[in-house]
Amino acid sequence: MDKSINNILRYKHAYHLVDASPWPIFSSFSALVLTSGAVLYMHSYKNGGTLLALGFFLITFSATCWWRDIIREATYEGHHTRAVQLGLRYGMVLFIISEVFFFVAFFWAFFHSSLAPTIDIGTIWPPQGIEVLSPWQIPLLNTLILLLSGCSVTWSHHAILHGFRKEAILSLVITVSLALIFTSLQGLEYISANFNISDGIYGATFYLATGFHGLHGAQKLIIYFKKNSIMFHLLCNYFNLIGNEKISSTVSC
Image 1 (tube, rainbow, N blue to C red):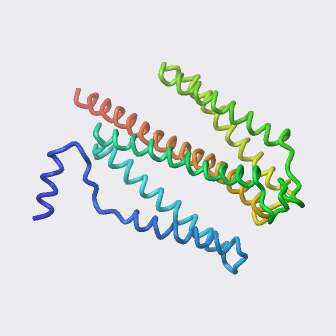
Image 2 (image 1 turned 45 degrees about the horizontal axis):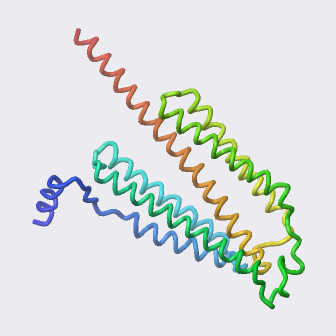
């Protein structure tokens, strides 16, 4: 009875009543394993790194499978109507707002600690014993790379809107290349730093802020390459369909 009512309601409105999925609870469990492994690894517990790697694998696996189902619902099954797409856009806006406040917390911690250093760190900033990185070397170069990547991705956006395919591809290649260079330089900066995340408030704020920023960049690269592979798959199916139709029409003639 419930299934029949559910099937009737599916066609009475523009929204998508999703089927039962194992991925929400599986993703929650994966996030628990990931965070637990991170804490154990940071405190040098035995097998903490193994648990961290396992959690990262599980969260990647669950995200891939969940996105696969969403893509299937949106493309092959056609459940993403205008109302559903509008809801997804609202969700993305709220996600971006939450990301802004996520990084506001790191900036708040930095300015609170630097403008009013506590007696625990000698009322000086940076704390005594911390050898800071020069802002005129890798940090300045990475800032310029970020600005250039913003310009190139905007160029790509306008090229796509105006139908300039070659310019869109070229600008996207430039953007991805700049992102890879930025990530490499960030790793080089970590290697050359003489302090770590456990060196008080300075190390904690530095590595958390820059680390999560770099992690966001790496995630964008993964999503970009994943999206391109999906688009390639859909285009191949499309051209195969066109080819089969031409063969069928030729045979029928």
